[in-house]
Image 1: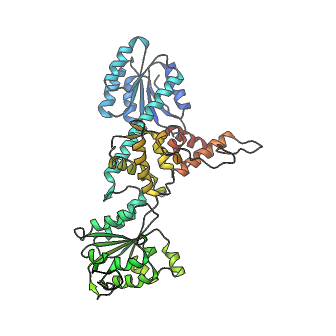
Image 2 (image 1 turned 135 degrees about the vertical axis):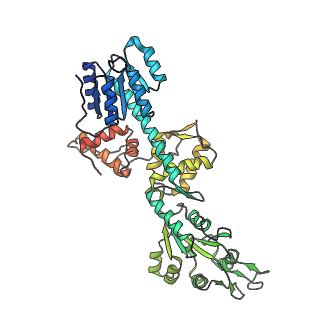
Image 3 (image 1 turned 120 degrees about the horizontal axis):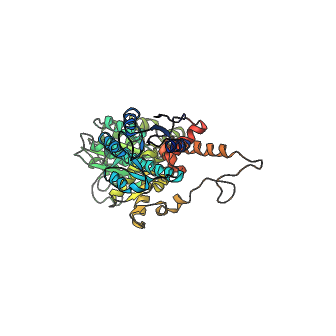
Length: 460
């Protein structure tokens, strides 16, 4: 009798099971369903091929010796339509040669009858783990194909796509742009992206760190001076604004600009002219981009920063999100830095990548690049694992009452099921409901996570 069943849960991956032995088929089907999988079962190869076309399974398990259509013929029919689909063949002890031949024709693995429960589930788990890696690689390649990169400004997350969309739209115009963000987020890269995407790309790009130049020298540095304007001014000096004429000037850490220079910068923005120290006003043609890691709104309230200057600078405001707010960009950035520092062939283990993705990165992209460079230099092999991570990443753990403890159970006891449910829910929330990352964080296969979510009724 032919049967077609699947688990009531409907949450796990679908496995097509094809076997003409009714007893073994029922036992195998029950084992798989108890492990959280959906199962579509068929009693011969012909029925199995029909179900393959109707149900689109995620994995196939098939016997080799069957009536109407053999497992080898079923394998050929499957591979002709979906060559990437993994197929596990089951064979009797005396037909190992047939199993080997099936693997030559594209089978993923084979099991020998009688098949134990543990051997079956291990083979299935390994197959889905491989599928997960393939899917992750596919998504990463897709992101790489879709990512927008201006001067190594990399990001495919929704947050960075919003930033890059503003960059695209703002670049052709000469409006001032104020770029806000924490240290290490790449504010200068955004400024360079705007410059290189504008009509001024062939002109100079001059970057000035307003916090790195002593206040008494900053005016001369920005606007220049004439010989004799002050003690030590033995020759004329051309300021940064004049040097940037025809191009772009980038004023980094603009929030640190001394109050005495703020009205002079405002005049430059309004009149497009600079007045060197001890000299006469000079016309310039410069686009101004500025950046800050300070809360300028708060500085406006205290009077530390002029309101009229702020609005002149922030015609187009851009806020770069911190790296912790866009963890989906971390794999892309990591591979970019591996290539940048001469190790494009190095691979990160799933555990190591999970640690990188879940670390909060207070130093943002700059800290990630330094970490990747350190791992390259101190690596122990061709695969970067958790052991290659800096101590601050490996030793990070949830705060608890007592050294080494992750949690403190109440004296009256606690439900293990509730504890597991909380762990699954917190992992999903921590990983922004990305199921692949949450599964990696919990050190379990993705299909097990899906089973637990269904079991405990966890939904986004």
